[in-house]
Amino acid sequence: MREKIKYILLGFGVVMSAIVTVVSWVFDIQGKYPEYDWRLYVLYGFLGFFVLVVFNIILLYIQLNDKTPKIDLIDNPIFIDDVSMQHIYQGSIIQGTSCMAHAIWANNPKHRTENNSPDKVRAEISYLDEQGEKLFGPIQGRWIETDQPSELRTGEKKKIESTDFPNNGASRTLDLILKYPEDEYCYGYNNDSYGHYMFQNPKFAINEKHFFIAIELKGAYLPKKIWKLEVITNGKGDTFKIKKGDEWIEKTNSKASKTFLNKKSSPKKTSSKR
Image (cartoon, rainbow, N blue to C red; front, side, top):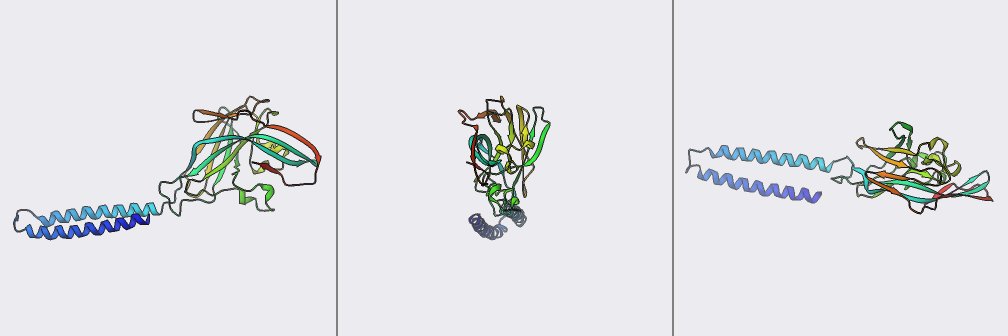
C-alpha cells in the first residue's frame, strides 16, 4: 500500500509539471488566438484535475484505514469427522467416537489494513425446527483452535469464548453438532458440553430429525449476517447429513460409536481428541 502511495505522489508531481508547461505554452499562444480565453480553459482543466486528485486521496485514505473485515464461509465449508471422546464418569473411563460437524470461516477483506483483523470474534448458534421455529439458543459457539475447558484454570473460560481472524485468509473452524448412532437425535456442542456424559448436554438435545442451524458471528465492525445450514438424521443406526447451498454432505463409513471402558481411574482431564 505504501508503494501505491509513492507512485500516486510521483504521478501527481509529473502531472503538475505538465500543467505548468501547458500553462506557459498557452500564454505564448494567447496572442495568436485572442478570440479564446485560454486562461479560463486552463483554469477549468486544473480544477477538474484537482478534484480528481482530492477524490483519489480520500479513496486511498479510506482504503488505508478500512476497519471492516470480510469474514465468510470458505469454499466447501462443511466437514464431518469422527472424533474420539474420553472422560471420567462415576469413577470409570468412558470412551467413545462421535460423529461431528464443523464449519470453516476465513477473513478476506478487499483492502488488508492493520485495522481489519478482529481478534475477539464470537459465534452464536441457534437450532431451529423444520418450520424455522427456534428449538433453543443462541448458545456460545466453540472454535476448535481454542483450548479445551479442561485445560483452563478457574475463571479463564472467557479466553476460549472467541477467536482471532487475521486478514490473510487463515481459516477458523466452528463446532456445530455431534451424534452417536446409538442415539435417536443429534446434540449441539460447545464448551458447555464438557462435563456431561459423552459430551451430551441435555439442554442441547435437538429433538428433531430435520432441523436448521443458524450461525451469527459477532465482533468489531462485523456486519450483521446469519448463515443457515440444514441437517437431517434418520435416528438410531444413523449419523446425519448436512447441507449448505444445494450440496448434501455426510460422513461415509463413519466409525462413530459409544464404548464403555469399565476401568476405574483417578480423575483426569476431560477431552475431545481430534
